[in-house]
Amino acid sequence: MALTLPSPASPLKIGTRGSPLALAQANETRHRLADAFGLPEEAFSVIVIKTTGDRVLDRPLKEIGGKGLFTREIEEAMLAGEIDIAVHSMKDMPVDQPGGLVLDTYLPREDPRDAFVSLSVKGLADLAEGAVVGTSSLRRKSQLLNRRPDLQVVEFRGNVQTRLRKLADGVAVATFLAQAGLNRLGMLDEVPHGTIETDDMLPAVAQGAIGIERREDDTRVAEMLAAIHDTETGKRLAAERAFLAALDGSCETPIAGLAEIDGATLRLRGEILRTDGSECLADAVSGAVEDGPEMGSALAAGLLARAGEGFFDWK
Image 1 (tube, helix red, strand yellow):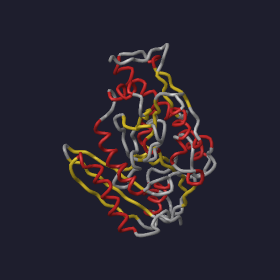
Image 2 (cartoon, helix red, strand yellow):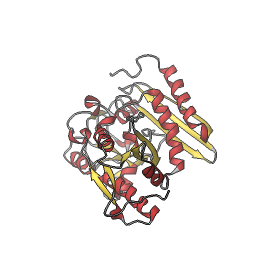
Image 3 (tube, one colour):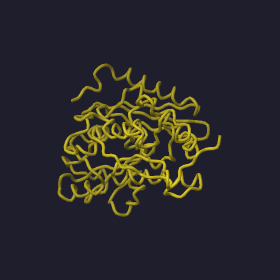
Image 4 (tube, one colour):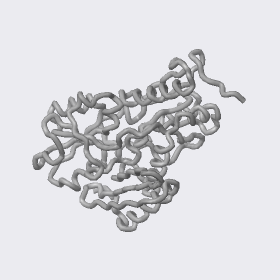
């Protein structure tokens, strides 16, 4: 049976958050689908859905529910048939999908590294003793305090422009952003930043990757999405998310992980930290690309065995 393609009169509806970065990611998906099928971009409509994580900006994520805060309302809209697909930053995605939904399409991964952002300081090594750094990421906070326990870390949420304004107002002397976000927004020249190598700060699991979620029984959409899926990104994320799943990762647990592929070999690095940064456990495994998920689970098991009970307890 021939694939029924969307049209301007009957567009495929793409659900997304409303931030500039989320819209950039949704439009990248739209461009890739239009190009893959030779369709006008009007055959795809972008539908903005406000999530709890977007509405509540004055409290830490761990206090209002963790990762699902950026996805729940979007997934509910898809299950209700109000949108056909959802575009997500994969670092925000829980490892378990709601019943009836599938997440199996990934666009080519952007730079996974973190960016150090400051109006006055060049890099981490240049921060004065006791300097105030802003971040909403428990992973970044724990990694920072593990390296520099003298620093003060304050809650810091909002889009790129909001964070720059907070820096200008003196709320903090520095903060962090994902390098991928700056690249996708075309803001490399507008934001004073330095890229942090992964040996210095291992990124969040799936950082820099865009995932596209669909209804499990929607065979038409499944066939369309297969045309834009990036296989290598999928294999890297399979290893990273298996690592995360075995650790029961959430916004309340400081976890970092990165898989890299060289030919037929996949190398996965992972680390877990105490929430106050007082201890960091790290390890790496290498093996065949197709064994990535098993490697991720094994790496997590090894770290958990070293950590012992209560390692992630809030301090």
